[in-house]
Length: 293
Ligand code: HPA
Image 1 (cartoon, rainbow, N blue to C red):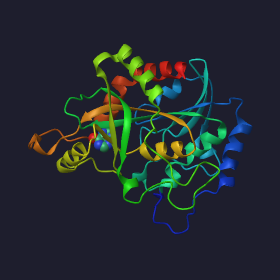
Image 2 (image 1 turned 180 degrees about the vertical axis):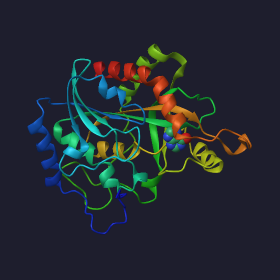
Image 3 (image 1 turned 135 degrees about the horizontal axis):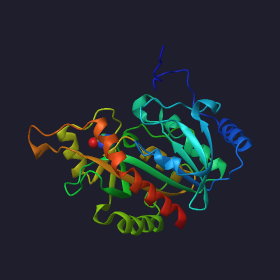
């Protein structure tokens, strides 16, 4: 029988530092690559991982104590290898809060990556466009985020501070490394022209898409795009001192409160379809960016 993990389980305890070390040590013993760049591939963007040369991959299910992903379109493996001459590790498939994982499990891979030697994290996602100027297929460099679940108590850094990774109080004002964002914007403008945008990513827990009033609220608080991932990984990456660059692929237009009835509803098929249409461009953008890190 398929069991959905439940965040309300009392038996589950967050990983200890030595458990995270053990996962990293296991991977180090199995791969000859020493990655300094980590890439998290979002919905329908797993093709990035297939661009990696000299690849060695590990199904999440084969890694002791690693969580396993449950969403179609998220294959679930770590892929080590070379991209644009740099050694990288890609997460093909990530863990989402809406799947029922606690935040500490959603973000475990980031800490494993840190212990593998990763210094720079490239995070990608599929997102809905809140900014009326955005069109499906646009690419957004994330300049900041609003981590709504984190703000109301679902935060991966709450509880015992793992000082081996970072300090108790982590600033977020510089989380999205400006010089990497500038490099991304330059590359994006060269490769996709006017479709390259820069904006604020709002994270909601999902799994429902936003109601029109929720969407208008997110727009009001400064959001340009909305999705169900990324922010937890970014705060954990910032906590352990990584450089971070975030890229959203705008896969659908989010319906706002004054758009009226009869608008097409957001759906996962459209999200995957736009991902497919833009996959090659996203891959080109990320490989060029890796070349400049
Ligand atoms: N809302 C939330 N998450 C999403 C969306 C959306 O419209 N599109 C892709 N991920």
